[in-house]
Image: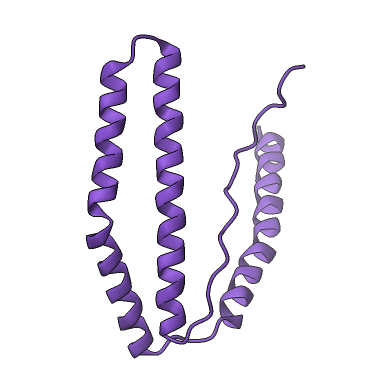
Length: 128
């Protein structure tokens, strides 16, 4: 029993040691960023508020279209099409939001941010 605890404990210890450098790199990345002044932060907050208000009708209509599509669906494939359309609408809104916030960042004197690549989950390779 003691040897099994020792074996599992050492594995956790190694896992903990592997995580330490990752945390260190994260702190270094944050340290390289330029600090934001309170005025710039207020401009960003106003930009986010403005986007939230102006995009409400677009977001609402996207939800309404999705609900209508799901209501009209007759098969599993129809539901799959609805899901794909919903994803595309969300991606388009996300791109609009990104462009809008980059304009706000530019007006505030902050560097624009590149679009983050989509994070893909590790999926099994498609069978040929």
